[in-house]
Length: 270
Image (cartoon, rainbow, N blue to C red; front, side, top):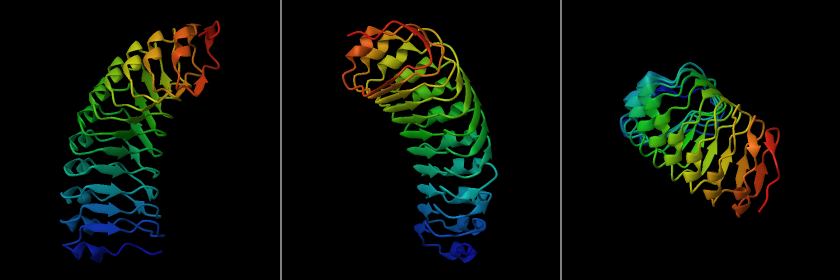
């Protein structure tokens, strides 16, 4: 309980500040931006409120920024794009609003980006497609709209892509089929239209594909038979039509197949 003392900003040699799982209240002191040697800032699971101070963008050696599960408000600051050494940015479960700043695409060392469960709006910036080291992108459960940028298909290291529970529209970009390391693709509960791209059948490492609760139409592409590692395929609550491809019977690892509430015909046959 209590506030974070601003005097901590005087600890010029500090490289780790871990205050997680306390009951800290109040604002994040702007003086923390003076911690030039800091590489880890962990403020998870507190009751911090107010805006993220722009001064944090000056902590040039920062590699890990965990602000998960607080009561932070305001926008995600463009100054965070100046943190060139950052490999983990976790702002989940706050009350942040406004757009995702395109400057985050400058974080060339970033491996994990967690922004889910906020009130973010606007479009997904295509600049995120420049994050060549990114392995996890979680921006689900916000109010994001517009198309899925085709530039996300450039994220060669990506393993987890969570865009569920937003207001995304337009077609699923076929460029996502280039994400050969992808294990989980969750796009459910959006407003996506068009056909399921056959290129998704190129995602050989994929274990979970969830496109449910959208407005996808047309047939289920038989190319999905190539997803030999797939354990969960969820396409429910779309206006998909045509026959259920018999090739789905060859998915030996599949444990969950949910095609409910579509306009499909025929039965799955081996």
